[in-house]
Length: 373
Image (tube, rainbow, N blue to C red; front, side, top):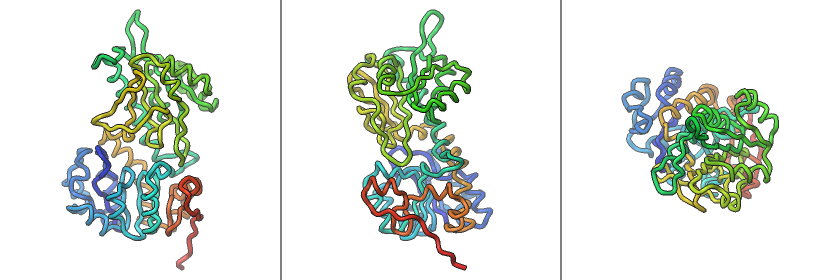
């Protein structure tokens, strides 16, 4: 199979679809891999490294898309990339269609793209690709919060995350006990912060209690406890995920108004619409804005701050799926792996994810494969 790795077009996205280590496995299996010149620069992977593992360097995005049967990306497709996709191509990428422009879905349907969303691939009731990026996002959110607490502008609280003897540490309140929340809690606790975790699932909270030896305060989430947590926090991390749909605003603007002056809100859910009513997407170069004297940070691609680690993590999480489709063909790979099939959002001109079809008001059809024997 011919596989293309384009340079990412989303603003300030420095990750790459596959690290050279992943490309090596594909080329060793006899597949052809086209890498757009400079695609790995943001992650410190040179064109030479890709050539050394058997990839072919091409000089335009158009060439990558036109010569490839499968496209492997990091971030959602842009309008420009929609124009480059060719009919019946396979696309591996984060998609987040529920919060994307409907024109993207229309293009995928018109061109009969098999679009596989990283955020929807399942394995043993987990989301393995999403979890890999969530591990990073959770840790990075605390690094970012730590910097935003510093006395860098008149609004900053000037608080040391871990405190010192005789001076209390910062209060870090985390909403959501999934992978993002767990890793944020680990990073915050490691820095000496006082950590509170909220989640509506008590079993998840029990897991947090066991994992951190009850060093984190766990609270069942409801509007009352969320409001109290928001008001108490020096740092509030929003880490809510509802698979395939836009994240609801569980933190209201009225709650934000009660926060301490200079408190930090980091909405890690922003790539699915955000869980905080006052959130709006920001960028790595301009990450913050202020509402009601509260510093908001809502960068959708937080893992791109550590692009090399993130690209390796993404490769580790995706390469088996990519290799399976390349080696066995699409139908066989999806038939053998129902978890991978769960990631398919569009197929043969139809939306194959019912919840997305309902959200965007398009026709839904289940995937049906026909034997070629």
